Structures are given as structure tokens and as C-alpha cells.
Length: 98
Image: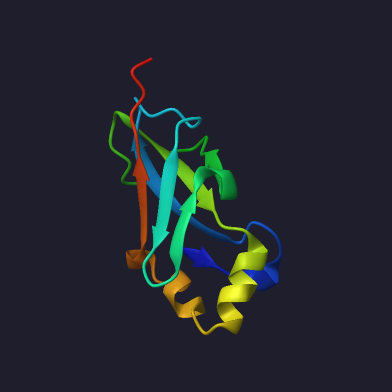
């Protein structure tokens, strides 16, 4: 996880591996332990063109961004450390039949 909102927009994100059957338009739910849950509508998902090391065949990498203003809000509430620990991030998704 990267959480550096002072560097500007799109600086709070985590990278996840999703199975090829998953379509980016289908619903996802991002959970950051101790912080909250965020639905697809409040997130920005970007499929990575280059596969990071460790992504297995049959999967693709996606970067999931949180809004910068949310990062500042969490920092003010003393929850910013939760964002910086990648073990706190999880992504739930559904697979598309089409």
C-alpha cells in the first residue's frame, strides 16, 4: 500500500491481483481494517499494463485508489497508520459469467 497524499492526487493506493474472469465494471468492495469499507463508486480502479513481479498466469494486476481528501481526513482522525499497512487492505469482488 502507498499512502502519501502530500505528493498530490492518486497517491493512496494498493495493488491487487484479480483473476482474468473478473471485469473491472463489476462491483468491488475495498476494506481497510480499522478505517472503513468503500464501494466501487468511490474508488478508482486502473488495470496495470505491465505485470508486477509475482502475478501468476491467469491473473492481472489492478491498482485501487482511494480519494486524496479521504486520506487527509483519516490523517486528521489519527487513522493514517492504518492506510500505510498493506496487511489492512483487502478487496472483495465477483466474477462475471460473460
